[in-house]
Length: 291
Image (cartoon, rainbow, N blue to C red; front, side):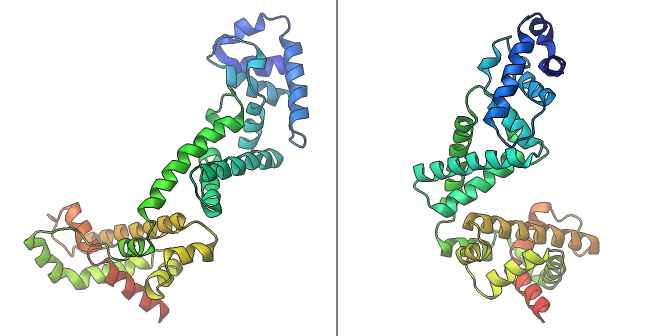
């Protein structure tokens, strides 16, 4: 079972590996080492051999010792083994904390970074963890990923560092400029756009509606919302931005279905018309829901 599973996974190099008289013994040894290295993880011989084979596929035939046994842990975590996921997550949390310290960020930043790493590494359809080939430890591989994601997250946070700026950016989404003709269209269609926004608001999830109610009507800042929901402020900003996008797209679809605007109105003009009245439309929808 060990040899067959390994050869199927290793691909074109199977013939070269098959010629090795010590292959069975080496695979058995690596299997026993994996069992000892990851207690509590359910491992079968064929599973371990296949994980090793995949890591060597397309590479010159080399010693099995060249591949870290962490590929077995990664494969088990991707397969959903609870113990493997827990072991993997412990490494993720550790490396997220290290990256946060290096970037001079606090615990909430580390928590958000760890969550992003989990999603990136394990979420279908293309979990990044599947790219780990065992050339070096999983810990070092995750360390590089944590730093890359951490830098990106720090950059995003920097763009939203001031609560007032963040709230203004999300609460008052006005186009920078518009033609005089489009300004006239806005005045003539204000009621239609507001109605479309009110209907679009109803398409939001209860969580999104609650977020917007707290944010726009109650004046709760994104930082305060982050504390309430036990997450990072950048995450709340993304939630609010996603809700905004949902409302804008649904309102535009509603206006097109009603034939409320000229068929010649461009997509960019529609975006401007809706976004320029977003604050008023949202508030109207939020107030109606409360009533």
